[in-house]
Structures are given as C-alpha cells and as structure tokens.
Amino acid sequence: MNSAASRPRTPIPRPTRLVVVIVASLTMVLGLPSLAAEAAPKPNAERTATNKCEKANGTLPWWCRTVPSEEEPAPDDGDPAPDDGDAAPDDGDPALGDGDPAPDDGDAAPDDGDAALGDGDAALGDGSEPSDVFVVPATIDSTGTRDVTAQLSEFLAAVPDGATVSFLRDGHYRVEGTLKLHGRHGLTLEGNGATIRATTTGHSHRAHWQIVGGSDLVMRNMTIIGPHNGGYVDELQYQHAVDLRGVSGVHVSRVSVQGVYGDCVYIGLGLDSRLSWSERIRVTESVCQDNGRQGIAIVAGRDVVIGANRLTRIGLMPFDIEPNGVGDGADGVTIIGNMVGTSRQWFFGIVGEAPVRNVTVAGNSLVGRSMSILLQLEGTQRISNVTIRDNVSDQGQWYNGDGSVISAHRVDGLTVTGNHQPAAGSTQVFVSATSSCRVLVSGNTFPGGGDVLRSLSPSC
Image 1: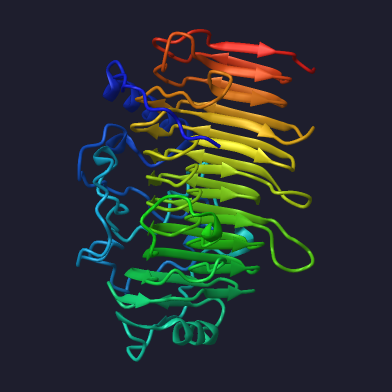
Image 2: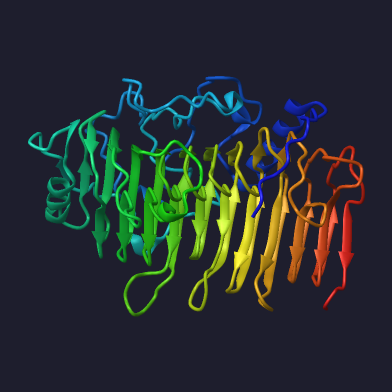
C-alpha cells in the first residue's frame, strides 16, 4: 500500500457555505447534534456540545443508563488532555482544532433522537437507577511515577458489574501493561480527564485497554497516550488503545488517543470458541492522532457507528473495514460527521477476505487530504450496499492505481451522491467501478477532474 503523492492544494469554492449547508441538512434529516461549528473550523476553536441524555417515549438510550445522578458533581471542563503539556498539541492540522475532545457539559452521549447513533434499547435498561460509584483509591499512584498496571487491574476486578469506576480528576496513571475487562456487564469507566500512559515499548500485542466479551460498557472522558511518535511499525501494529473483542454494546465517548503503535479503536472477534462479532459499538466525540496503524479498524463488527470524532496524522487509514478471514466480516457500519486530517493511506477502505454489507460513509469533513476510497475484497468476495454521500474534501490527491478517487471492485449496490472533491488532475476519475452492479453516481462536484463515473465489466 503506497502513500499518496503530494499535490498542490485546490481551494473549495465557497467552502464554509458548502460544508455548513451539507452538515445542516444531515442534522435536520438524521437529528444529529449540530456540527456546523466544526464544518468551517478555526484554530483552537472550542466546540459546544449539544448532546443530552433525555428520555424519548419514556426510554433512555442504552449508553445513558449509567450517567451520574444530578446530585453528583459534573466535570468542570471534561477535557481529557492533561494540563501539564503531556498531550502534544494538534499543531500539524490547525483546522482540526487542538486535538482535545469537546468540553464536557455533563452530557454523556449523543442525543437520543439521533437516528444514526441509536435510539435506545429497552432491553439494556432505561438509566433511571444510577449505578454505584467506585473511586480509584488514592493508594494507586496518580502522578505517573510508578507502573500501576497490577494495582489498577486488581481494583477493576473487584468492582461489581453495573457499577461506575471513577478515576481521579486529571490523574496520571502509568500503565505499561494491559488493563483487561473480561466478561463484564453494565460497567462505566468515568475518566474525569485522567490519563492512562505507557512510557515503554512493550510487547508486540500489548493493548492499552482490552474488553473481551460482556455487554453494555461505557468508556468516557479520558486520554490514552502511548510511547510512539507516529508512523507504521510492523512488529508493534497490534498495540491498540482500545481493543474490543466479541463484546455486545460499548460506547467510547470523549476519549483522546495519541502515540499508540496500533489502532485507536479495534473492533474484532471474541477470543473464545464461539468467535462472536463485536456488536452495537459507538465511538463518538473522540480524538485519534499520531498513531501507527488504522484510526478505527473493524474486523468483525455489526451495528457500528463512528460519529463526530477527529482523526489526524494516522499511520495508515483513518477508517478501515478489514475482515481477515473465515468468521470475520462487517454488517451495518455508519461513519458519519467526523473531521479527518492527514494519513498515509486512503481515507476509507473495505479490504480483506470476508463479506461486508450495509455501510454508510456520510457528512465527513476532510481537511488537507482527499476523499480517497478503496472498496476491494480479495478473491471472489463481494461487497454489498455501500452509500458514500455528502462528504467534503478540500484537496485533490492521487491514491488509486486506476486513476480514480473512489475505486470499487465487485460491489453490489453502490451509491455516491452529494460529495465535493477537487480533482488532482484533469484525467482523474471520481468513481471507477469494476465488476459492480447497481452503481448510482449523482449530484457530486468534482472541479478540475475528468469523468465522474467509469464503469467497467458489470457483472449483474
């Protein structure tokens, strides 16, 4: 996989107006919290969160079930990045902001009316009963001086299901190993702006957090920092910040990740004989930067929503669906309303060796990079029902070997509409579809480019 050749940046005509109109339309149609403030971002501009855990038809969304009660003090600013300079500023892409998640105003999750981010699950509780809170004891070093992997692991194991783990506000926990949660249910990890940091390289498969099996977990308001300075390192590519294995129901919210050798979030198979997919996964309002591999990787996932995040300086792809073989796959993935900066490879890819179906990539803003996409499974495997709509890029680049921005192979049902992408050259094609069926390309703007669609050898 080769990195893209640099090309001069091509300005978007009336960029602010175009992006705001697109995002505002998505907001009205899908009920999303407004991202207009981020659509035309300014350096270090703060973003005001509008998400609320409010009941709709008497039911709270499942991720709100462990929100602290009104009697519990809310975080002052919700900024998971430490204030002592440990977290590097996001100065490589000033248009993406300062790299910190949105200020925490006490709202724990996307609005419950949000069709894309879920509308609640009665089977998982309505959140009317606040969970018990277990505060990480002061005897566990929170200055970052000593490795506390063993002590934190012992403490977490003693916390009962259905409870909330509360870290010291803005604490620094040095964790050189892996914090593991196996078969846990209804647990909330409230970071309170704490940092989990590794300072050593570690072994090849060290994850910073690993969740195996279990259901209905929430991780929020924390920073995860690895020892890496960015770039892909093959022998350390499995050191993920958040490693999800066969879990049912996880919401990662306002978590800032940087400097890990692997993925910021990995969504994969369980580790038992059943090889269960991870399902009902939400990754929202979080930050991923300066990592070694993918931003968010889906290897075995069902009902996954990745929304309102910021990703930049990614080792390979910001978003990667990559089933590795028998038992893997993806079904029902939505990537929506994210802000994406630079990466070594494509903006989004579906590659690998197992079927993938029902994928939507919508309303994303790409700053300083192109909307490069590769849809190509290996062998004779096919992809079905992919929608790419209302995304905006401000720069043309050459990525795909066939001279296209979006290269699709063996796709049954591809819709590409409402996108804006400056071309890298007059011969560049916006969409190239090979051996694909039911391909609809309409309403896109592709200034400076060649054909909008080149379709070869349809197999319908």
